[in-house]
Length: 285
Image 1 (spheres, helix red, strand yellow):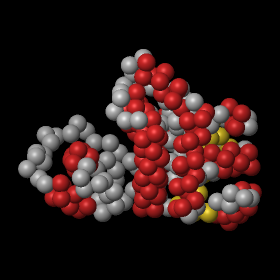
Image 2 (tube, helix red, strand yellow):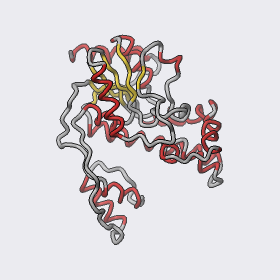
Image 3 (cartoon, rainbow, N blue to C red):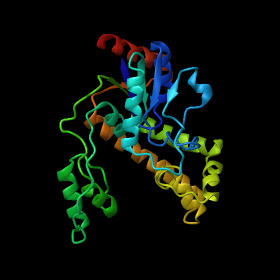
């Protein structure tokens, strides 16, 4: 049996994955794009050893932060684990839906890109319209010209419709928007209390400016603070805001790309949510 515990950042996926792994004697495979990197611990909310409760965890904390770990790399590594542990129950956990889809579906990568089209004479509005024609779920801001062009230049890299190669149940955890945003804001403050500033400064002092650090939420914003481009207060507010926006994008992907069964998390009694999920799984066998 393959389960995937998905949902927006901060909703409680880690806790659910460990509980389910203990229930079904399963291994856990990470599908969070940032948690693959070594030493990016606080800012990625990476699971601590004490929280694993003896459950084997894979594809966490194993890539040097100076390297660029791609979707293709993840597909290769995840499928190797799927083959190695094909006789075990497996639980994927994380918020990077693209990684999950690449692992479990017939998701293919193109050959070298042909000569890129020149978009220099297009207005931002025209670029945005082209993006919507390519993908009606596109959430890129109309004024973000660089990302719009990058999105248009990106080739389709999957078969349509997507064909599942590994049968899986997709368990989505959710809560109301107001509650989720409060969780996200509070978690950012907790990360700061736990030493996120020191964690980022360690890489900054070594002048490491890899893709992971310069694009990862929580790292990019604090690099801007260390560069003197903003105050610490505004950096923290930016982390909170971008984390909330990321949660929106996660919902969009999961709702449009994967057959997710959603469960509202009961934070006062998590066991009730756990029971609902187990009951659902039992009726799917």
